Length: 497
Ligand code: ADQ
Image (cartoon, rainbow, N blue to C red; front, side, top):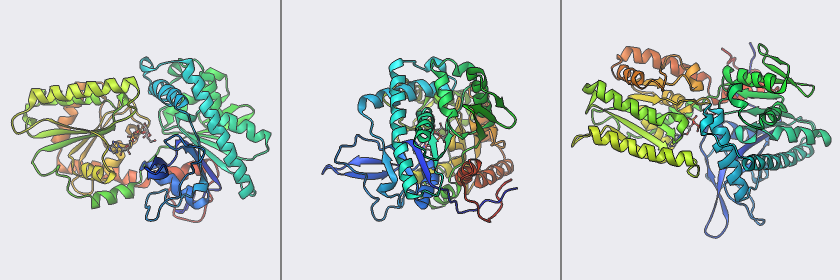
């Protein structure tokens, strides 16, 4: 057993992600302001970057002009990036055409569906790929600038470059090559937030060898779960002929040994727990109607259409629930420039209308559908007051909604229904697991959840909460830093299981 401390200190850290940890917005007088972004990654990683004097490389969310500079955080800012100085931020400028081809094209119309094992939805286009390569080069150049700055500021430390996600799978290659040429020391880590697909799917991508080589330029590669690690090792062996060790999870590449690790991400548990305590009554528990809750980005991987169909099936086959339950679906608009997403929006609007039209009475409708983003505070209230959460992705790297739901169950223990095709499904054993492709079975499981006795709900929920509390997002971050050997360990509480 290893001891790791609660206060995380990383040796000089450079985080590289598609988006900076805040977005920049232009003001009326042509200045720029920082708008906080609230994701779990930012909550966990930004304070470490702030404390350790690290740097963050990313796209600021708008086109920067020559005269623009990143503003300092304003007084009273309580977001996780509050102490992040402008000198700690290196923004990558992308022009509109590159951004369209790289982001909407290669990232979201090619890699997103392919890596979720939905190749029929993927578009393969050489222009997308050229833009992806160029943008990855741009990110690498800026990261090298960050490395040079680190070398000057802290010559005694070996910086860690931590690259995030499928937008930047080539960056490590250029960073490693040029850093070696310039004699810049660094370690490079990569974390993929989405699944890594089986080789049979991966090999459909025409330039798959470059992707594998790009990732292998790292020292540590983290995925959410073991299956994705094994898929990656398999692809390296079969696609590149690399020597791999599946037991020790190592791959050989370019005379180096690369560590592959399952590092399941968690949520800021205590923050959700606290928000659930503070969130006002959201009106869900007042009208004697049981609430089934769905919360997702509007994305075809999240299984929204199947979910609505399963809810319809429930009303058909268990009519005793008519008038006594409702499905509350909150869907955040996402990637609204990409065709698959425009189509999904239309399908959802139609299906919600059809089901409501079929079952509504003068005083009740089965589905309440919010198409929009709601605040974290409000979300915590929904999570706390709903009766059942229906988390049914067709495929999902991890799925944080399932974890946020259990963190917010501070009153009545609700029931979590979860797809085994989400990374979270492999760990949250006390949830009711159901295959989202089996509409009839989902309806039956939903009926079971709605009629489950209190004691059983409590036992399951307590176990789910206990696990998420320990394996929270800070645990995940420490595990990553520890695996790559850059966590400065101090004596502290033993948090390994
Ligand atoms: P996502 O695909 O975005 O993340 P998920 O893990 O569920 O999926 O995270 C969604 C986040 O958005 C949650 O924190 C949730 O609270 C928030 N959210 C959803 N709907 C919202 C709404 N209507 N209003 C406000 N907030 C909303 C990717 C991968 C996942 C992986 C994460 C982290 O696809 O599999 O779990 O990264 O690695």
